[in-house]
Length: 303
Image 1 (cartoon, helix red, strand yellow):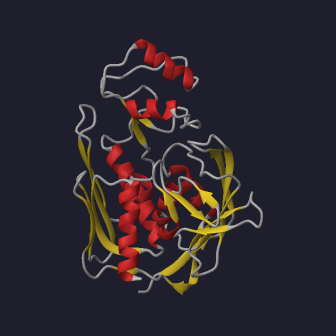
Image 2 (cartoon, rainbow, N blue to C red):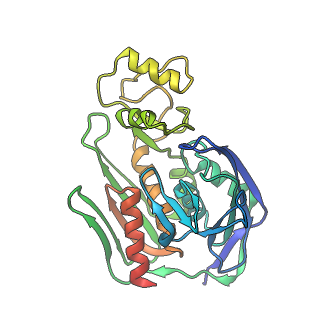
Image 3 (tube, rainbow, N blue to C red):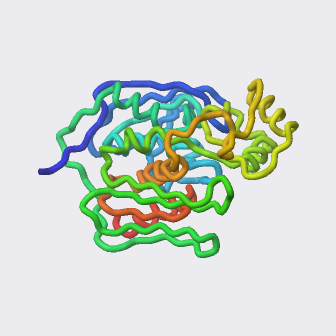
C-alpha cells in the first residue's frame, strides 16, 4: 500500500531563546501543499525570504547546522528537522522571527509535542522516497569518522560515538522503527564537555544556555573557583560534579543519552537530502560536518 505525504492539520508555534545568540524568538509551523517539502521563512526580514531545507543551502556546521540563502540565515536547524522527520511530516512552512531556532530543552521533544498538538494529516499525493540501491559512504580517516548507507526497505539508523574519555568513552544507539522516535530519541539532549563549554563561554557563545538544555560532562579536575565561575555565568546558586562525571544540572534520561542525541542529529541533518529515505545508516563518530557531507553524497548520487 502506497504511503501518502503528510502535513500539519493546524498552525502551531513555540517560543524560546537561541543557544548561541540568546535572541528570543518564535517558530511557527504552517501546513503546506504537497511536494513543497520543508522550508523556512524569515518573517523578520524584508520580503520574508524562504530557505529550503536542502543540504546545498548548508553554509556552516561549526556549532550546529546553519542554512543560508541570499544573505538570510537560519542557525541550529538539526533538532527541528529531526522532529519533523520523526513525526512523518513531508511538507511544512516554518516561520521564524529571529536567526536561530530556539534551543528549547536541547532535544527534539518540545518540537515533537508541538507537532502532535497541531495534528498530522495525510495529503492527496504519494510519498516520494529516496530509495538506496547500493552503498554510499563518507569517510574521514584522519579523525576516524565513517558513515555508510545500505539498501533497506525502511529507514534505520545505528550510531556509535567514541570520545576516549573517562566519563564518556564508547556508546551506541539504534533506531530501527521510526514509530519509536518520539519516545526513544526525541527527548535526548545535546551534550558538551566542560572544557568545550569554557571555550564557548570565553568566545561569548552559548549566551542562551542555562544549564537545563545540555548535559555537561566533566573529564578533568575542577577547582571550586571554576565551578563558581560557571554558576555565576549561568545564574545558578551552585554547581557541583556528580560521581558519574556529569554536572548536577540535569539527570540522564538514558545511560546512552549522548549516543541517542547524536542519532537525533544524524536524522535531522539527513533530512536535508530533501526526501524521506529508505536505507540503513551506520554512523561512527558522526558530527554536523560529516553528516551534511554524507547527505550531500547521497543527494548528488541519487538525485
